[in-house]
Length: 240
Length: 240
DNA sequence: TTATTGAACAAGATTAAACAAGTTCAATGA
DNA sequence: TCATTGAACTTGTTTAATCTTGTTCAATAA
Image 1 (cartoon, rainbow over the protein chains, first blue to last red):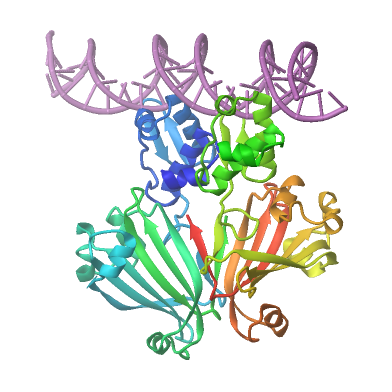
Image 2 (cartoon, chains in turn orange, green, cyan, red):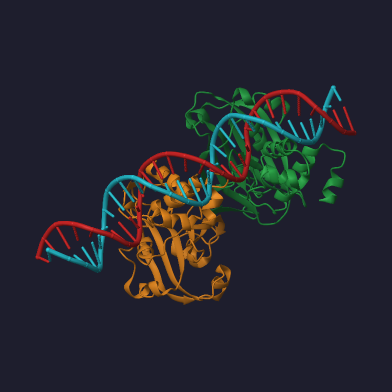
């Protein structure tokens, strides 16, 4: 809850609770129809009084996210589309409204001690998923995404069976890996010769590079993804 | 505390208290979102009256370091690492830990119908504030920031009197213009010859460009700022 | 004169407790 | 088998006490 508290710093407790639960709903961790924890359970979880919990739930009810029924509990009644492939904090927008095609470059298990150290975990095995995105019209590659997922029992079958419906987000959700908070970096990188070959650009061309690390609510890293975006096709966009 | 008191000897008590607390905030002892001691606790800590404590807190609030809420307390709302005077959601981090110097290129009132149209407002007068940031060590320019603020009665004196404490954030805060939400875009721009001359780089060099629009809670635009950041010195960083 | 104090009261936030009322489910007994 | 009971859960509602900051004002000290 630490991250959420940061965002809601200086606000009243009911607002912090509403913010935390709203995030779980909008991120899809609590899907349509799901039952929230009972008020007494929330009392223990947030270490507040029941009155305070109830004010938070009332706020969520006012926002149209949940409905509450006597003797039963509170349920998610928000049917809006949850944002696929990550939370709605920063998205890369294609300038050309072109449809993008995705091609998988590789999907396998790798060992990466350096990344494990960087993430502060012991597990050195990762699922490596490299994908290249292309303009559906002319077939020109416009971005590369390299995902690294710490290998967990829930994900062991992924390299064999592939992604669920071709979506990494759905695969992670099905495995119970829901992103809660994280970090993103954005800077400029000059293309290496290998990447330039994949992307059909000149080596040394400046590309927008984003690196994103998402974590679970307990801080365990879920995914580290590095994207190379053709600046002619992409800009980063963020609403706050 | 002894040293602090010595340093602030001869100044008013509220100022001493503000100075002491400011030091704790700037040093990181009180991080973003942290709650300050209650006023009654501060009364005991500094052995002054509550009115005096409150004056000190009011001073900190004016400096943009804390916000205070009835029935809850005072909270640190100063991020400490924001490169520009803005909300602490996306920050450009200098790779070199160098201190940055800021030089004002211009501060005047301009007319910009295109921008007014883009922002969806009728007022075509803006305060234009262009600043260049330089490495304090070697004096090399590393970024340009161009702010455009819709001219309002509260801001009419700014071009004449300058910024409050040299800070745009404090000036806006004093004018009651508090940013509530907004948008940001980030992409790559090749330097124009004029910008290249200011920045001491070659024309056509790829720079990180961010454009940010902040609005008040009622949707009125407060500031539109375009930044050009030297990719050798800056990366964008976002926590979510 | 000015800064500071001390005190009182208002108003918002939070807690803790008690009780009412709706739901579920298993045990009970005819 | 079937209806009933009752315990154990749920949310709904109210109350009082205690914490917080907001505001005002007269007394006091430098």
